[in-house]
Image (cartoon, rainbow, N blue to C red; front, side, top):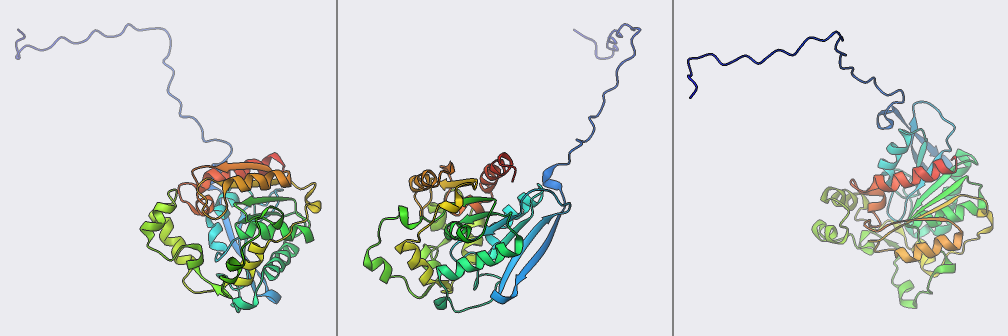
Length: 309
């Protein structure tokens, strides 16, 4: 038994060596800065003759990358693309998010007097300001608008995120489906006029905070053009000839309640486009999900880099 009063035996010292110990070196900071920390400059653009406001996020240093034009869908606005604008600006792309007329920061107009054709004119007018080298990224209705705008204005690439289908791939609507669309409508037609908890069950990839934000920004007023929705249901024809040499990416979502994922694969085949499915994403989760948007943005970045856009 060891006597607690007795000192414990000192451990033997390590034998001396002739070699000098090598100090631990702290690795230097990487030569290339973390893309998530690159400075971003915010700007805006006005197309006064059409009452359009465009939100722009620009990298602090100019690069040779093609400018990106983001086009929102029904009841949306530039707010849809906030996370994408930051993601791409920090990686060297300038991004411009259009607000269609009567949406978010753009000029107020009577939605009953707007149409799919007038929305297409909005997209073309912004492309004319940006130039012929833009890559257009469209979501939902915005994807179909991007296809139509590319018929009239040259683009360097198209990224279609859960886009609505053109006439060539649509099933003809029933007459009552057309009659049921009012001259102007709000979020109830998209199924967003219900409790956030119910929406959370239908959009499992979105957080409750995402749901509350989307529900608030979609708004409650009937401000979307019914004529545009009727045109989409009846079928908007798309001419593929101007897209023959344009790099194309179609993205689908397995939880999409608006555009079935297999239909988007058919669209990609019809366009001769690359197809990227995200089985665990919803229609809005592709662009607005705090926990899910970056997976989609990474796929878009890979596509842009592959084609040197």
